[in-house]
Image 1 (tube, rainbow, N blue to C red):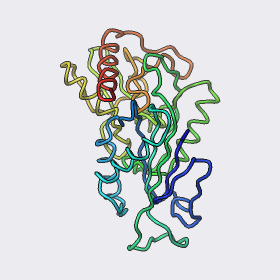
Image 2 (image 1 turned 30 degrees about the horizontal axis):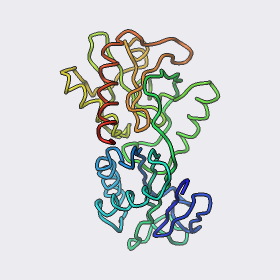
Image 3 (image 1 turned 180 degrees about the vertical axis):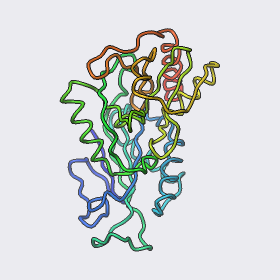
Length: 280
């Protein structure tokens, strides 16, 4: 198959699939999701993505009808049906199906959606252009929910400005990007990123970069930083499942970074090698 869509046991090409109108995802965006990439039909960091999915489900009281292990096996089974071994794998669970009612029935069981398309991760060595925007999202950013209108609007603004991504900030404090986490390399050679509080979604790739810093003995601080500190940083790094560790070269039309190329490349090579090794 050239791509695959799955819903509660049925699958077909994505363009042929339909879902019930009473799925709570349609009314309220009442659900959670994950995204990972595969190479050679091996899904990168799947266990970490599954841990985060089930953590979000627990917080929200969403009842997933299968175990993590069963869900992972399902993804591998579906992945094998797609022609290309390099894939973008998206899966979500909505709270369930019922007539529209804000307070959900406690007996609801989650619906399982999966969409798989051929796609490679991006070139992590190509610098990005960013813009900055006020972070007007709600205060539950630590849950990977389907409520992404602020991200949609921010992404539209970025595209209109000829940029790749938008950096959110609250009163000058940098939180994260529209669909990525963000780090800086400080003038003292340490890396810094926002703490994993309710203002950000702690990404799997974020965790990998933190681990890489510890591997090489590079100081890493999970502490807030400001827009001014970001603009003055030696490097700005954006992390996500499809970009791993990608630098920024311009923010709001101003040239940034480019002052710690050796440390940047050390981290990039380490993370890319990890991706290659674990998907060989």
